[in-house]
Image (cartoon, rainbow, N blue to C red):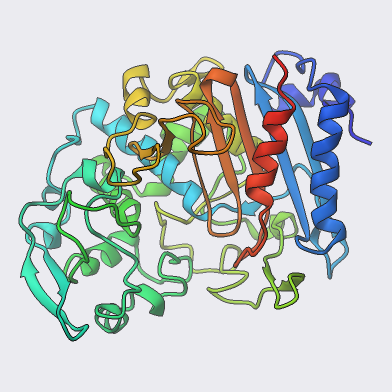
Length: 416
């Protein structure tokens, strides 16, 4: 039975995570037990195979639990060291890399992307015509770095019917696994993004929130601006300094059993093991290891990812390692897109969804920020509550409501 913080953490594993301070006092036992019951309920009902939940307050773990199975068929139980595919949670790390280069003067926030990727110097927009077809028109303005950071560049994942065939012909969109998936590609990410720039997008730059390849493009921009492969840049400037040894694009073969299996929600609401390949287990162990997708490619653990988020919560510094200045961090976690993302109190900053109105995202306070990943992972940072919250699962598609209920269960445990 979990005490709100493991005794083993108090005995020294905290320092192994990079936190030198002792474990915090924890959440009230009876309220932490509600989180326990919630997570176990999803496992017992076979709605998820397993999960790792982690809550930090003031940088210290106050709740950590692994439940269920990392691979049910193999009989491997979930542990706090289990590795997860984090998909779009990669976007925050890549956005931090962009901001680091902004601080160095190698990238301008409002700089045209065409300065780094030639095919983006002049882009096209596919407007729907009255018959459902596409009418190609030139973009009215250059796509900028800021628009990519906020997903307001008009760039989707190429799934829309009026452009899907064009994307498929160039190995993008639904033809590329789930569109965002590139772990099986034999080419570097910049080759893929150069090809993307020749395709039409779905909205004029700066005029709509469109979720898509934006951060993958930024991953290529990082490579062009730094002269380093994206994995090397992240390792040198972010994951290495912060001690994130488990945050990588590909899992070493020797550690393959640490990677949780992917499941899907079946017709009866119970888990079904996902197939091999790009729409299921992926190529994170045995792939070509050539494409570093800044929008969706990383694997990580709950502890590693929470440590990155804690550095962001603290203004870009943790344990003596500074990855960003506080003003750059403030840009990231402040709404930079007005009402283009949402008119209901949610915004989008330079890498994070932001909470601008209490009640817009459950019990999260104004100023909270976060996002999620296609495999069901989710995170939230709430500066007013001095808290980082992470939930790792591997469900694609995820037909459960565990994410919202988990976040609510964490907030109910806060009584101060």
